[in-house]
Amino acid sequence: MDGILRSRSLVWSAVLVTLGAGAWLFFGGGPAALAGPHAMLAAALWIPAQVVVYVSPLSDLVPWPVANGSMYGLWRGASITWLAWLGAGSLQYVIGRRAARDFDVERALARLPGRLSRFPIGHPAVLIVGRWVPISSAFLNVAAGVAGVPFWRILWCTAIGAIPPALVLAAVGAGIMRAF
Image (cartoon, rainbow, N blue to C red; front, side, top):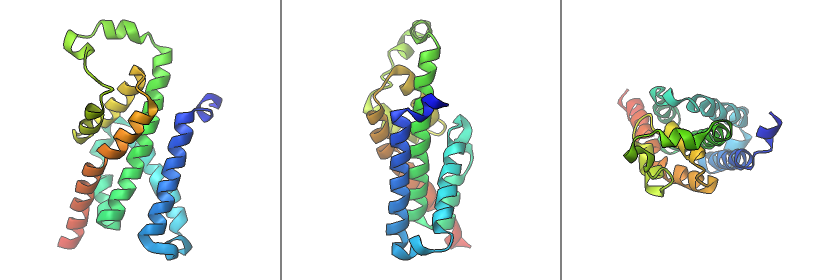
């Protein structure tokens, strides 16, 4: 546990998610949103709860981005989903880095078929566009951690790659609410 708390990537992820949540509250509803009786508590609980669920590879089967869009509207719902995905991607990366220390990665990679062993997991296009494929984000983040891709590349690729699906799924949720 002590090593996890000293992880720079985990600390930076927590800082960025916290700053993003504060900006979402401030710009999403102005200073009144920060003064609401439960606004800070709701954000402090809702986003980390989603991060915990999104760490699982099967989290794409949970329709929380659609629920975020239906509860908060398009822009706020997409922002909440984006923040949760950014936090979960960072945690999955840390899990991959830790797994690389515990296992003989080189031997496992040597057993992979030729094309798969040469897959460019650290290329920004793979890290951005790969997030648009359902159930692939968790595997991309963990594989990038195992492969030793720099954390900053994962962070900015996650930030860019998560925008389109977060907007689309929040729009679905907002559209469902408008239909009823």
